[in-house]
Image (tube, rainbow, N blue to C red):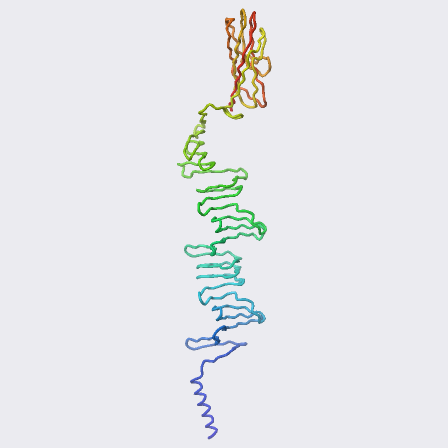
Length: 444
């Protein structure tokens, strides 16, 4: 009876305890060589930190020497995935901020593929070795983000934004080729411009290309374009531009076919020259004070006819230019009877010239004279061919000066040449002198 009573007491106590016993609390639960199963309605495993502050709750998953932990830390208010090797903490490659709900990938996580459908903030270095698809807002607060596969930004109105949140530094997109040469697409707050920057061996070299944010003008350094280059509604300034490649061609094309192409040359703000082409002609146009002045040169498309505006004042063409004018005047040169005489000379520099002249014969106490002659020659006191000789055999008043013009001659020379104005007179009694006038104009 006593033994039966003892059993009943044990059963009663156990029953009472079963009705009031709370959920089990363990400092450590280990499952070795098996599995832990929780069944029932809305089953849950709860891991709770009972410390009021500064503690954490953690679930550890171990395989070999590597162990991963899922940790909720009070102090940082974040849920993190932590890595341990040989029992030592390594890093926390991913955590979720308890305040903002943003996902942070940090400390050099390497993954084959990352797909982000919502907001992602990266606070440290990120390396992605496979294709990456970002379908939501992605924010990188790190200075190093490395993609080892092709990243894809895919959502309506897709935008890749790089923002200098300080407002005083710069935002830059770097292009490197694992060598000494690096290019950067840079928006620097101080210059208020977008620049393409060149670096060699880690050192800044120059900014060959610059777009001003305020004016929208394009500025370039001394640059050679070695291929086909197109500029639409743009301006190039502050440097030398050359087109350098085999069969180099600089093309301006009015794609409408009804307007014109204009190549403008400015000096200062008010003076400008333009070369314009349209469907009928090419012309060189002059502006002063931003106002049209004239078209000094016009070439018709159909006929090739050239119209060159002449000078409107009493000046001469500059030395060496088309229209250059040279002259010389010699006086009182004695002319012996029936003897070839140099009545004048003119020195001409190399070029294509038209040469003409005039001789005035003046007799003194001459009783009679017969034939007189004049010509242009390139040898002193020597006549040219008959086609270039001019003679006068009519009766001449022996006491009156007489003028005779030689035939105008074209002259193409490659070195400085002396032109002689040759005169001759057949007379009796007294003496004869000549005055020579020689003139030449550069034809082309």
